[in-house]
Image (cartoon, rainbow, N blue to C red; front, side, top):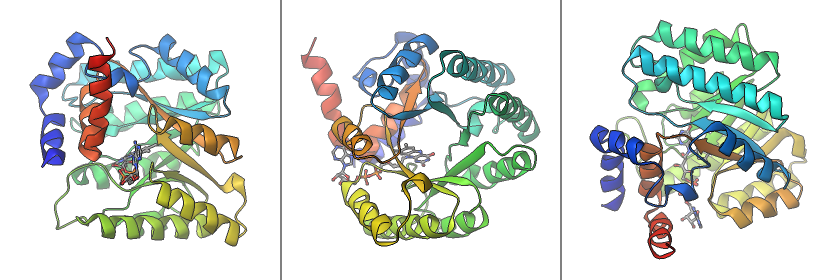
Length: 300
Ligand code: FAD
């Protein structure tokens, strides 16, 4: 029930626009690193000081005109310059829909090409985040096109999709982030039961750890993390073949602990004014995240 409510709210464009005007509210500041690049660089430096790498996401949803997509591209190019100038340990995560996928795929590809090319000059990795099912095929097409020229690209496999295994096997030579999947999807294309999703998630992780290039295991689920720790030990998989990833502000103690234990660890660092949809999806995944809001209200 709550999941559906927050998922519905995440897609409400009126609330999304209002949220942009009023700045980080409702406890979003606990899970969004800042509204601008300098604030975000400071957050990255703090995480780097603990041996944690970062992947930076310039938040943005509902981009249906070219001006907004171009502005998002300019902002991401600014992040790349800032990463380089500050010498911080960080990569880029982006959403094709923010760069114009819903407007025109060729236009989106040109925007992505500019970003990936600039990042490649500085040896910065660019991850294409995966969105909902309707954008899955075109996003993989964009990745496939760009990867013929650039090697600093990778993407995400969402374990809830029936097609996840096929996509993963076709892209095993890419750096892949494996996740459970965050959007509401139809039973025609995706597992609906948590147990089925978890089972497929572990199956995909194991396969990619054994056969793939580099695996990013992106989860806050300690059952899966503990399973992976044992699996890599039993299979002599070296630590430089994989990393754990979590979202900024979530399970902070566990993030620090994993980095301290010597695992490669990357925190996904979202920033920007367009925090609303991202924040609502986090509440949909785990309504207990509401306690972030409650804390915010009472800690004034
Ligand atoms: P869940 O299934 O949410 O939780 C499993 C169990 O873990 C819970 O029952 C609880 O015991 C424990 N747990 C979870 N969270 C907490 C917490 N905060 N505190 C204490 N215990 C907790 N999705 C996409 O669709 N596309 C993407 O590109 C994408 N990129 C992502 C990048 C990163 C770095 C991460 C971490 C996630 C990303 N996701 C993405 C979201 C992902 O698909 C899941 O929706 C999200 O991570 C929730 O699933 P989970 O694996 O963390 O565990």
